[in-house]
Amino acid sequence: MKDRYLDFVNSPFGTSLARALGLPKPEVLRRHRPGEAEFGAMAAIGAGPSPQMFDQLIRVLTAIGMTGIAHDSAPGWLALAQAEGAMSGRFEPSPADAAATHRVDALIFDATGITESSALRPMYAFFHDAIRSLARSGRIIVLGRAPSSCASPRAATAQRALEGMTRSLGKEARNGVTSNLLYVTGDADIEGALRFFLSPRSAYVSGQVVHIDGPAAAPASYATPLAGTRAVVTGAARGIGASIATVLATQGAIVTGIDIEAARDALDQTMLAIEDTSPSGGAHAALIADIAAPDAPADIAAALLASGGVDIVVHNAGITRDKTIARMTGDMWDSVLEINLLAQERIDDALLAQNVLRAGGRIVAVSSISGIAGNRGQTNYATSKAGVIGRVQSMAPLLRERGITINAVAPGFIETHMTARMPFATREAGRRLNSMGQGGLPVDVAETVAWLASPSCANITGNVVRVCGQSLVGA
Ligand code: NAD
Image 1 (tube, rainbow, N blue to C red):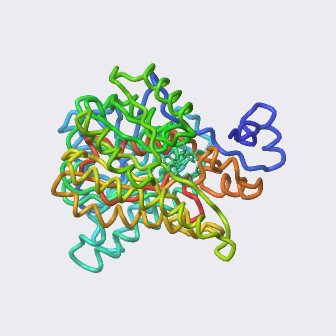
Image 2 (image 1 turned 180 degrees about the vertical axis):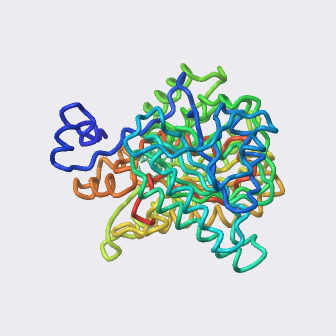
Image 3 (image 1 turned 30 degrees about the vertical axis):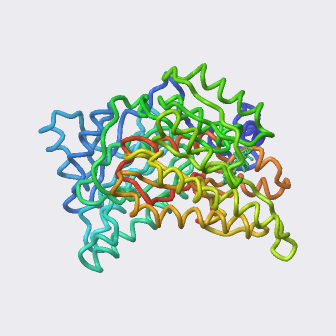
């Protein structure tokens, strides 16, 4: 559904009217467009004492063509950049009214060496100096250590404090800026996460904390990181599922899309459209199945096995049957739990038992911020979506030895059929009550799913990444 307010306040007339009346003006987010530069030109780098990620940062920034310029809080950066032959310079704050050309595209703060809260001061100094220099749709990334991995309570306290800073920066920055925190264990590979969070692919992902632990393989090509893989997406006929199928295929995967009989035509259309744009040239397939039917897990496993198995499983199909608990019928409860949660469990059991999901595979499940915050009239839906989070967290350690990762994305308000059916006031509240002041698009969820499905996310598992523009619901 179109967001007419966003379009209006960004039109020439709407811009002046919004300014005159003091109306909020949500930013038109910069999203990935084929042929357009993926990354900006400059990142300002700040750091606490003894930063441990500079080597990797230099390597990644150089690889993606960004120049890292050193803030006073990061004295080691210039010397290292020189030694590495990387482009660098010294950060000078730009005045509030500076032209866009003076701005930096990202602010990156390495807090990995901070072991007590008094050492958080350089983080204040960096963002105090640099926040006004950040371009529209700019990126803030803080690198830290998971509090649970810290050697002392003081270190864990200081590292936990980073969450408050990162999330508040996301709420203050506006103008389509995102702010995210990466907790890195040891010298885990951060290239995949940095590329995602620095790119327009993460346009609607803000206020998130991602845990990265262990090595990860770089794909042969970052343009088509899923080349040579096979993927299955449930609920692929329309909305978020259709977008996930499309983005996975664009990134090189051969996709089987699943949907119910009633959506047969839409599913065929989605899969045909994918065929036209897909670089794999592979035989994408449409499979009609009600995922909650008793024989669905066996049927799906057999169909996927016939083409040699699968590397990526995306559990996207989901329904709502909203009513407050006293008015909710047993059927409303059962159907939501069956489709949104139990079907995922049964399908994964079937795929894992027969190794249909190959070693090194990826499972990505679609949860919801309702599953994090709860929602009036959605006891069934929120229960099912919270269960999805429980599944991801509890299965991750069990799947580790097969090299399989399992993560969830939790969309906030996304413009689809599901949200178009909401009453006007609820819809407007869902759209506006987030740091971006607008709803997300299916492609925002799809890009996040594709990132979690990529080879460079081998070291990210058991995580829940909200795609909600930093929604105040469940914040
Ligand atoms: P949608 O209703 O537009 O699409 C859902 C698709 O799943 C449809 O094609 C439908 O036919 C299919 N489906 C439903 N039941 C099925 C079954 N039993 N077997 C196979 N396919 C089935 O919904 P959407 O907005 O694209 O949502 C996709 C997922 O994202 C859902 O899990 C939803 O809960 C979640 N989500 C959406 C939002 C949002 O704002 N739209 C927010 C949070 C979470």
